[in-house]
Length: 77
Image (cartoon, rainbow, N blue to C red; front, side, top):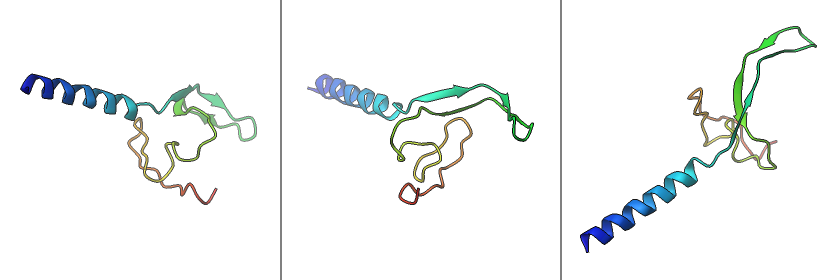
């Protein structure tokens, strides 16, 4: 019975972890902005979709690459 409980707990843990890492990212290469002539360093961003709630900058989320917490209210865009 203990082995079954341990296996079930481990399986549920793996499923919940894989669901939390589901936020897709896109790498952006460094480039020069033509309008200002400034260089924008390479960075990562969330893959474009039609949701305001899963972006790194949205309140309640954080950017795993910079460690910054999101501050943008998703209801005010």
